[in-house]
Length: 335
Image (cartoon, rainbow, N blue to C red; front, side, top):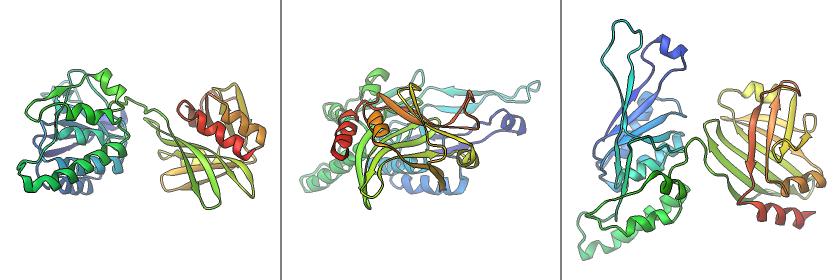
């Protein structure tokens, strides 16, 4: 597989917001996962950019390796490729053109690695059974190991188990094309925002219910927690996207519940600090506030320069759908 990195073509395009992308084109070969890691190390592209895939498949284990590296790096995925059109002497910017592409067989594993996954017009996404090139009896053990790796990878990427059922139902000599709407149902296509995933975590002397969501604004987490010594707490982790100073210095911090039906001002009660690419917001809250959060349809945190500011930084309210039972059981257990 060939990888091509595109960055803004001149200063004017940089001023207009820039254009960054990676094209991943052609058959996937053994060792391409290492090749891709070296490619990222060499070019150091920014995260929150898209890698466009146009491939009929190839080496499955290399594809999984590339997909995991994409997720670690924070890239998004789409299908097709971008290239520059013929230069126009009267235009300081050469137009860019997207060409529709195919993402088939093992290439779908690369696609699943995207933190956000798009499906542009004209794209084709096809699956079938994965198998070893030499399906001899002595390779049966290897086949089982590979199947386990695929299942583990698909689960780690947050994809519905039904995706593997569709793949395994199609003979390796055939290809089954899956449409965009079905891919959304399978959590393969996310668009600009993933669904919120909810779980319960415990560390140190605290336990909390955590909601997590990826979007074009970053990877964010909101948590309702409890610790024996301090009681209930609210905790948010915000991917700062180079706004650490604003997120830690703006004067107003509010927990929003049910849109903005209820706002809990924690400006003076919270602590804020930067850790790596994130900003953490932590505050002890009352039992009544914890109850309101646990019974809510959504909650988030807004950080503003002044209270009446029409815009905010932070986390747009996350839906509690999928986490309602955990939140309510958690609250009633510790209240």
